Image (cartoon, rainbow, N blue to C red):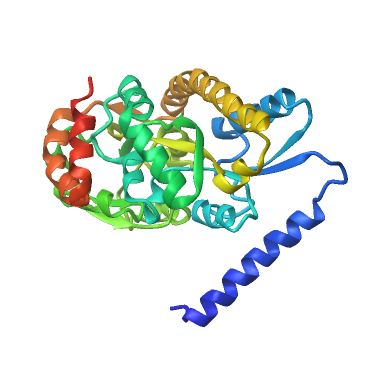
Length: 329
């Protein structure tokens, strides 16, 4: 375990490296530079959408703003980038439920069996709930959302078909270290095992875990089709991430350039949603071409059994928000 003193030293070293990196990349011109780091690799639609944002901002600002995009965690993992934005070192990133470390309401970016489909998601994010989340992000974290990206539904992969919760009994399932995920899968009958993503392929290969859950994009890019036979269409999480800019950075911009950022965000969101639908269809077909079997499940049975665990995992003050989202048609 790291001692508090060692942890502080490592934090200082981390930010020193980031500062040195940016110093070596500094520009001699007078344009405003926005440093945009994200988690996805260069083939992912998040990166393609980030490049679209760069193109739009630089065009709409007539070169007064330069956006530098750093994919694949070049500037650190998601929480590292949030801390870097708060420290004024990085300007932008993509983030979702990880923000609950600073603001509990952002848990709704990824709650099992709450968001029904794309239309439902849009009503949530564009409606009163989304407005409340945005306001709390600005107030509590210092992050201003300027767009959101729908994420592909999370599905369960395994080496035996899963149709009902009863089929999960005793299965050792890798999950991310998210308490609501652990509690939900336990309620459904599995044995959830938190594990970092980089360890999952080997664990599946060696049989340490028997199943995992992720969107099509990650199932494909991580090569899980080599060690898993079935994609069971649980679609247990339909969620989103925000594209955010540090509030202090945003407020430091002239009003006309703030409008450029907001307009570019809206256009980027529209661009992402158009290519997202096509990408999901392609990825499903690609996994089938690589030998995976698409298995339908009794989603109603999964949802009914999971709902108690989900509600028990939420702080009491957020139950009303959960119920308001459920009521949206």
